[in-house]
Image 1 (cartoon, one colour):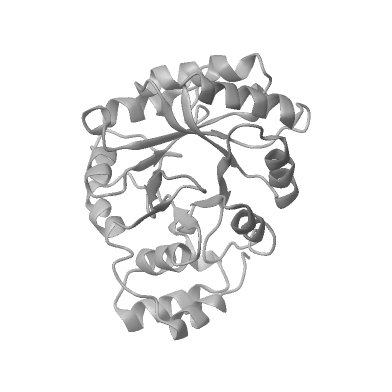
Image 2 (tube, one colour; image 1 turned 180 degrees about the horizontal axis):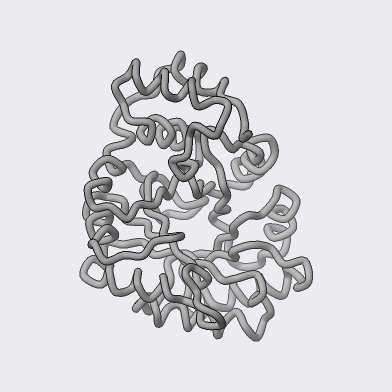
Length: 271
């Protein structure tokens, strides 16, 4: 699996990792993924939360990757309501405990909160790095302006990533967020890169099917390669099926020819 630098750091991450939103485990998928090179495992304290009890998926991730922790790169996210300076360290430590790690490789703000000053949040995040609880700081679902504001208040450490919904059919971020990330050296982590496999609801689905048929490649290979062949973009598809791990891990072992990209670039936005 090819790896690229995370932001402007010397840390590298695979261009294809695994997401865990709506992941329920039990079939060794994450361990298989790490061993296949998809060693970036992304989760969040809010995933599969029950009532006021967060972290169900984090605990699941911690359990499933216990035997491959040394190879895994673990990313998680703090929820928007927990971004005050008193809550950030408490929630980070709780996430680390559930994940069974001493240091969270990438700690991300799940979404911005206009009710809490970004300076307050980022100062608390930077202290986590100082204390060794977090290695890298990221954000998620930040607009171009929100990202610029966050970048401006960083004092000691960079923002290395912005996780956004981005795929062949959903490209609302393409005009400004991607450009801002590239200019700032912030890696784009594309979540929902396969559009939840419900391709036919999009006007451009016929183009994808045509390319898939002509190249004898599954749609997932085409969608993932279209994403990660772009500068500074990685993807985190999700699966619950062990047999799908091999398909995802080999999704980018081919070259996307310019004429194919031109065809795919004609796919329309979401319906």
